[in-house]
Image 1 (cartoon, rainbow, N blue to C red):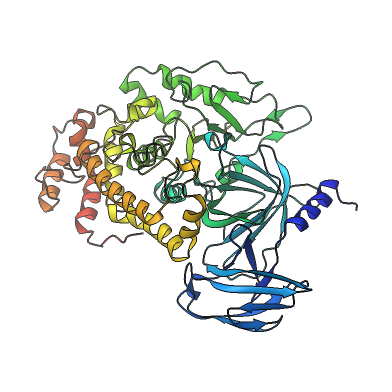
Image 2 (spheres, rainbow, N blue to C red):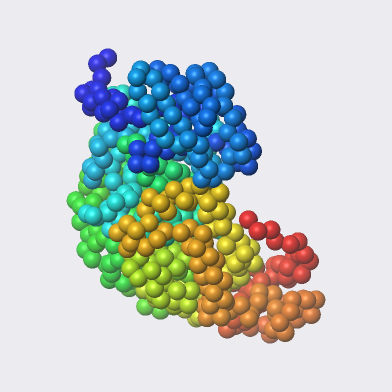
Length: 585
């Protein structure tokens, strides 16, 4: 079968941009045309040890010199005491030509992209090289720049959306780095993030802490965030820095029900929308009118079903919840009906998540709303996205680390009408929100646990030499307001920020001086609390749960089910008997 013209042109372009190559133990070695450096990805266990490697040369080269030693194809070389940033001089010779540079090693995966990329999808090739793994063939893809303000004119470290294709241009699924098998992948540059890892670490935290969506029993594999890993990227033979290589947020990630189509009609089931702008509709205060013949609605975009496939779309499920939220007037009405519109455990977790990270760009926008199957239930849940502006990072780096993203910056719950009701002390959801914070505060949201997440990610980049390569590549660029990028310094800032943030939340947002199970309010949880709780349960004059103040309910309703019963006594016994130390994840 004859290949399409774009495939032929792509092969020609790839050949023109290919650099002098060799392999070590069969591993593809990337080349940076800017610095003349070769980069080889090996397991992190290699670092600190000598590394022996069998050499294979491309046919145009006859000899490779590493330091003072000459090698031909099939010889083995030893690189002594491999370390991040350590280099060895190399000289390639053959057919009357010479090429001189250096070689170094990384423990990060490498992604090599070739093509003429821009705002629209264009053909290219992508090669994913996993540490120490032979293979990583060059794959055909369509690639474009992606993002909002990060994709505006004058930006340099671009984000990319990759869609893999076969020789005929049809989509082709691939799996990398232990992630899902799919054709759609995201390359997040962390363009304004001075630490480069905020989006990756925050999303991983959400995946660990978030309640499962309401349909979890039907779809246990559903994820409300995308998995990924940090990689080092080359674009057209030039080093482009550290990226977060991740899955895409879509129907497949959320396991939404596919639409049904027959000869006469289409039945929409699962639906997915992305909130791209901070609007009154997005904040659920005053929804604008919608048009089913448009793929956007006041800053919100249809993501599934794809508008190019299904026209007109149908906004009624999202409008139903947004309209109700905008018109509900009393806390009592909200408490009675909110669960009919929203996946409340997930929403509560998201408010906590948002408050902890001070995710200033993720309250009303940069989230996904979705419905699993509207023919069964129109309840909406949410998924996270684009978490660069967290833990002290602003939309822009000018000025760097301003006060509006400081650790004592007030939470913005009132900016979203849904959040404002949940955080109202008179709401039945208020003690549940407080109780959930306490639960997470003693595990995943301990300051040492949070700091360890960022430290692991950044320190791995430092140890592999990737951090220094990123700093050299992008320090002083206008993307970061000409600041110097220093990942070690940024980690110090993040760690200090977390300590102060959690102290602020404990004092100003959550009732940490009131503890679940401290029934008698003496500051301790003990057998004395069991006695008081048992007396309350046995009392014939016990007031209804609704008569308790929010803080009283928070202490006494130990299992958080809205009732005071024997079940709370059982939960309190478990708390008293639990002496197992909590491990830092």
